Length: 107
Picture 1 (tube, rainbow, N blue to C red):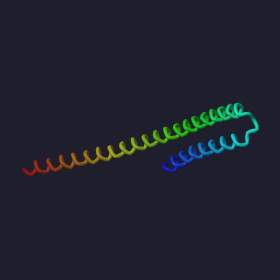
Picture 2 (cartoon, rainbow, N blue to C red):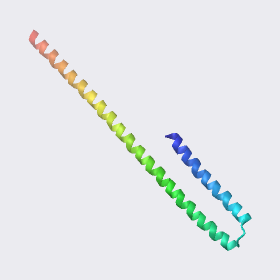
Picture 3 (cartoon, rainbow, N blue to C red):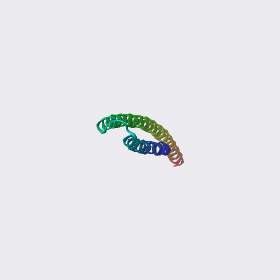
Picture 4 (tube, rainbow, N blue to C red):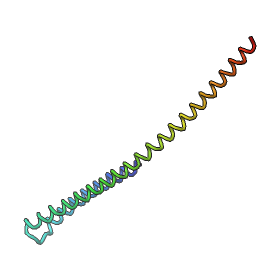
């Protein structure tokens, strides 16, 4: 799970650096006018923002699914532990009852 978080951060960092490098190169090598270039850059920035939101949503859905899975596993572990404790308590009560009966029969 730790690797997924690290790669998600690396992806976002790479995406932002790529956007910055692309914008810089576009400004340098742009055959259009400044206004046209700015319009294109704004449109591409909006597209990149939309893609980033989609990627963040995907990551959120994945984490939500993993969280639900972990919660379910935790519930199962607690149920099993509770069943063991209940069994041990029942055995202890039986042993106590048996010992009490033995002691009462001696007197």
